[in-house]
Amino acid sequence: NAGVTQTPKFQVLKTGQSMTLQCAQDMNHEYMSWYRQDPGMGLRLIHYSVGAGITDQGEVPNGYNVSRSTTEDFPLRLLSAAPSQTSVYFCASSYTGQGSYEQYFGPGTRLTVT
Amino acid sequence: AQTVTQSQPEMSVQEAETVTLSCTYDTSENNYYLFWYKQPPSRQMILVIRQEAYKQQNATENRFSVNFQKAAKSFSLKISDSQLGDTAMYFCAFMKPPGKLIFGQGTTLQVKP
Image 1 (cartoon, rainbow over the protein chains, first blue to last red):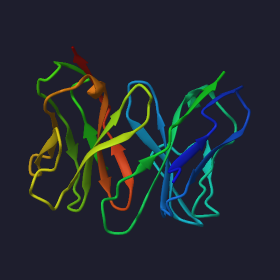
Image 2 (image 1 turned 30 degrees about the vertical axis):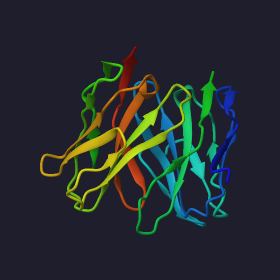
Image 3 (image 1 turned 30 degrees about the horizontal axis):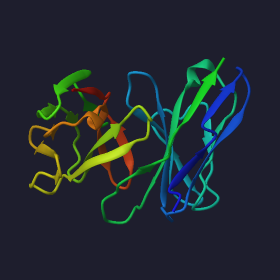
Image 4 (image 1 turned 45 degrees about the vertical axis):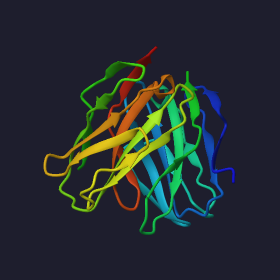
């Protein structure tokens, strides 16, 4: 089991560029989500998905798009990067059935927008 | 909307001693979960302990335990016999099933030898 994987680990973008952060999990989890972590703050929810074909907005969705075509993958797209999107991005997954609801986090992607 | 507040930005403790990290939250929900996550310098998010709101008994995981006061909306983490490896940032988090986590601002814990 690889768990939750994220690529790339580091990325530098210029303002206005677009890119996709990749997230994959091999635990057959229905629920997947993206968070961003800024200095001195906790993680904030960007987008989430409760299953393939279903996505919804979180707390800070502006400037980001997601899609969920398979259970395993949940990519995050930055449409036109801005310096305010400089952050560390975490992907997480969990079961949605009754249970512990423990979320498993990926290692994070550090993104810098210049 | 739910909010989570951690009022201690930084704390320190001597190795082998006990430390308590505070967390309060605000919600009108009745069914929810509370978590403490640890984030060491590697930045990996690691689940420390979890509490279901419908359970009155406080959760315990080895040296880690919580004091869950539902009426007061308080969820503190006690770390006993602190070890150098406990040095990390600790986040309290609220979750309404099935999975939207709301995090506090975090507490940086330094364990001193």
